[in-house]
Length: 323
Image 1 (spheres, rainbow, N blue to C red):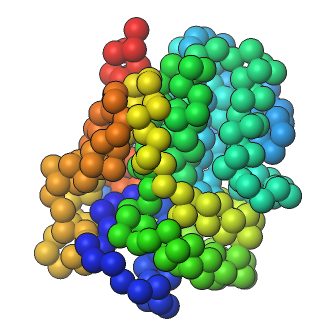
Image 2: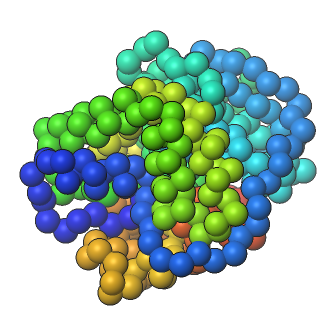
Image 3: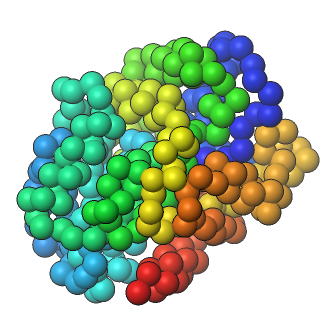
């Protein structure tokens, strides 16, 4: 996610187009090189808890629980899992409706997620996990920090914030209207249109590496469009900022920054220097008492794919500070 348009505008077709292009992040510019999509590691077990599908890897402590972004699955974490599996027990979650999983029949997705997450901790006796989420998953991790800090060790949000930046300048009613209009377009997309959008999104927003565009887009396109739309509505209308002070544990926000996306030829809302972008993220997280924002240069929204070494180093440094 990135800084929003400075002024508030009326909800319109152009607003919806902006939201659709901004579902998780932003980007423009020329690509850089990154590692190919990592293969699936060998898992220890796979099971369901409520609406959540869970893949477990490794056996160390503490536990590391990974939450995907909108429309994503565990594949977005495969490199991360392979890197950290020797040290930790990793639980990679798949949200209902994503990555080929059945959609949820319940309507309050955030609340259902929180209930099922707590059931996961209870049923599998997971104590003091570190929760790391990407995009929507980062927002969910922040929500868990507000509700369950006593059960968690720390939170890592990867380009996920307590409010989506385009929504900052909107009233609650404007957010609801805009989200509903955009969700209608998402939910009614046919498979070919969905794949085309995912390819465009990944090539201009998700990653700096052209080699990752098709494989990630095809994986994103396996998610149920109606489920993606429903999650999008809850994400876009959420504002977790009032309860950030309830997060009593350390919170790391990892912010990707790709300089070519911020040139004078880019849209005005993207013309931010790296320090300005960090300051913007800090402003949205200011209510959390133990927060730090770390930038990952030369990366777009999927920072763990674009700059894995820098990403792992940031996570390792943060975890080391908890001991």
